[in-house]
Amino acid sequence: MKSWTRSMIPALSLFFCLAASALAQESPHGPLTIACDRCHSTATWKVATLPRGFSHATTGFPLEGQHAAVQCRQCHATLTFSKTSDQCAECHSDIHRGELGTACDRCHSPESWLVPDMAQRHSPTRFALTGAHLNAVCEKCHPNQQKHQYVGTPTECNGCHMGDYQATLAPAHAQAGLGTNCVECHAVTAMSWGANFDHARTGFPLTGAHLAVRCNSCHPGGKFTGTSQDCYSCHRSNYTSAANPVHSGGALPTLCEACHSTAGWRPASFDHGRTSFPLTGAHLAVPCASCHPNGRFTGTPQDCYSCHQSNFANASNPVHSGGAFPTQCETCHNTSDWRPASFDHGRTSFPLTGAHLAVPCVSCHANGRFTGTPQDCYSCHQSNYAGATNPVHTPGSFPTLCENCHSTTAWRPASLQHDGFFPISAGTSHSPGRWSACSDCHTVPTDYKVFSCITCHAHDKSLVDPKHSGVSRYTYDSQACYNCHPRGRGG
Image (cartoon, rainbow, N blue to C red):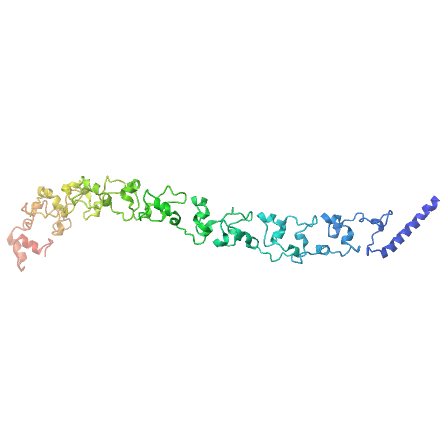
């Protein structure tokens, strides 16, 4: 019997294979040609498993997440496996009416139909989710979600927050005429009034103490448009009550920023350089009241004498008063100190040069007299002129134009410009060598207008006369010689 059974095994195997082949032709598996035992077992025909060694990833559609637990018939209803679509919409009906496209994987994943990481999924749209929007319920912005309407949702803040805008009373947005561009003040982290408004965008940036001022201090009644930007409009009371110095009554202008800053009303710092009288030297330490008594600032005189009359009147070295000095103090003094003073004589019509630079003022300005001081040399140097003996300068012998021979460097040596009226310098017919002293020609020491030509020339009249025969008005006389020979040359 055992022998018969063993002999029947090949026949039975052939039978089952033929039977399987026949069944396969009538199977709903369609064109499947794999052996039956790849999926079925002898225990039961109805319960089948995936073919041993089969990987769904080889089909181009790997089973991940929830797809791994799905029964094959849910995607392969007719047990036709080839040409099965891999598009989500083939299995999952489009509840969005095509508004979001058929690429379900843009928002959904195989792990769950619920949308994970909404911020990431929302980023491809024109409205990326940030801040508090990340926790917002979709229906808040998409109220017609039941109808699956997403296209056309507004991206402006007031599209969702117009109710917040109209209900806000601190400040009242609608009544104050504030714009509906919420992002100018609010951030997406919160809609509360703890918003950060960039005041610099208004043309009036907040600095210093202004940063801590409540909005309604400058915008009473929720009025924001047309708010004045000048300091006085808000600080009129500060201006009026200021007493050191007094501001009101036109004493100081209302341009608060000229002295004050936004850091604090006090201390104040006035830039005197912005006026027509910049402070320099000792003026920097002078109390304001010294030049601005009784809080008077406008119309303050700018000339030195107005403030320094007492200094001018009491000056004794030299005396300034009585017309001796002009009242233009800046001619000699500077703002560093009243003393020492430095007078620039070059600004007068008599610049000081040479030895004059070391001469005490009183030598030329006796008794403190400065106006009307003579400028000719002889007025100061009469004694030098009178005492001169080599040559004698006494009146009539020399002119009193000292500058013809002398310079301001020193009274001696002197250089007479004789060639100007009769050349006697080197290279002339009367050059040195023909004379040794002034007295060779000027025979009267006390009168240099008297001179003699015939002292050096031929003394015999009988020898000179023949040389001048035919010369009209010829006389044997030194003055006649000079009249015809003013440059000392013959002719």
